[in-house]
Image (tube, rainbow, N blue to C red; front, top):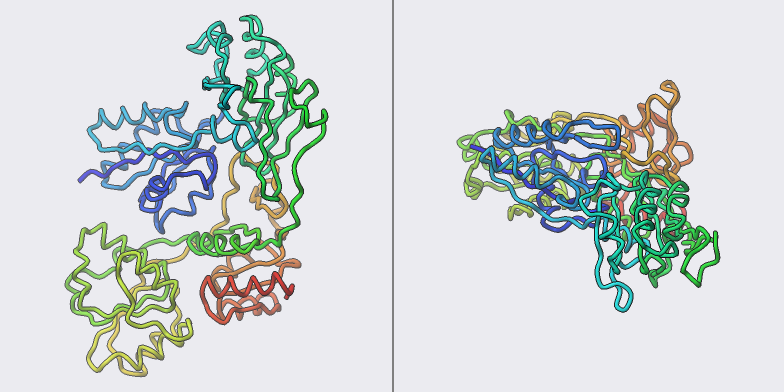
Length: 531
């Protein structure tokens, strides 16, 4: 049976993907993605999802277009749910139409999911409306890649009174300006070059059409070029926060801003936290901490590898009385395999379900399944004690967890002579996070993992105030190549804290509740009191 492909526009940053696009990413079995998108979106992928980078940058193509077509077709024919994740919108110079046609020719189902294009988001992000009443009633988007070889002639473009937006035109800025001026456009027309929008080193440089080539040389690609009266506007948010760095290059139509002076408000320094663990854990914990004003950086160094063959079949499931989950990852792997096998979820109707904590139970609830047992304290030992009290004689317990599961649980069940089967339905793999492409200059505390640039024998120390570990495995994975430095450690539970103390001699703060909410409350107290 064939799968299906979703051609999804990722927008210009993780927050600008559509709800429909995010849903597709979260349900994907294969994601084929471009370099030039916010890689934080990949953290939304489910456990076991295959991630394939096919990014194409100037003078550097990981995959040619025909190879991408073949990948899409091959994975779909293998029966997978495939997401083709593209920066901005799939069809705004994104070749999404070509990929759709290739899928049509192969007889495979696909769906296009629009995205927020950089041609709109970048100007708005820097305070430039692409249209504005009384100033510009239209905007035209042109590829700057071929400059004078574009389908639209400069004579036509020069006659447009609205806003002109050139994508992929950074290296051709001088040619673009020369062509438009020769075609009759006023050299004093305001122009802006918006460099690396939504990245750490983003910058806006303002000038005129006459000096467009010069101001483009002051910034890096990728860049969006805006030409027209709206390019002189500087809309700023009313809330007090840091705004993008903006420079006026001299002959600017903006009357409020002196030449060469940066504008923007300085935000007070935020406390920073580095979160270590699986993608799902780092994503949830980071989102919770950001709501409380903590600058959370994710360090997803643990990959969940499903072991589908260890998940029992329908008959064995129906013969059990209890299902036991010790992590949200186990729930996801189990439910995804149930879905892949097209098993009727009603086979679980007669089973009772135990979860180690509310986070695991919440993941279960996404499938409209509800835990019958959650211990008062969210530890393996507490779960074992609760099961010993609740499981009746001759009832069978099926434990679905990681291969590295804590033996406390099974030891307790054996001592209580409870019938059980321990299924290692996934294992964890420790790896170093990839540096996001396109970010050679990093903000304070942002993570770089260039093995060639670093001394391989020297541990790395990251610049953050707080470091949060989601498991003992995360502690081991992080300390293999990194040091704590002056960061205050916070561990989700006693096992992780004990492992940290064993390896470093340092004691960690632990929350009362072994959950993301517990970490959040603990981090809030630390933010206020500094300890």
